Image (cartoon, rainbow, N blue to C red):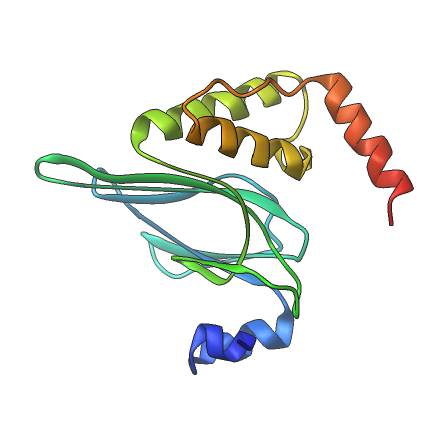
Length: 171
């Protein structure tokens, strides 16, 4: 499937192909729909109105995308995805509100799981490490252990140093 076929024939498909950036649509209607980026460095931002904005990420950027929605009876959806923005023509997975998509390193649904991942991110930040710089393998590890309803291994400064050294020697 080509990138254009994956995205349909919309103008946004052509825009993505021309600039190679990953687009994330964010919405904030307090206590109704709240989509936000928990971490990640975006390349560009466009504010559409008081409630909507669009962020663009360069290939290789890692970001956490949180989606939460509620109705009059309570929470109807909560989800967190840690995504690696990819460059064309790399393969990618599709994700709502992320165009064209990315490599999904971690995905959880349900507020309890989302809260556990947010706590994991907080613990990484307490070490003085930017969660965006964490090894993609660690996010995959957290994903798999949480799917097994187990506690994932904590990310440590030693693991981070080993990851940074491995990046230097690998092409």
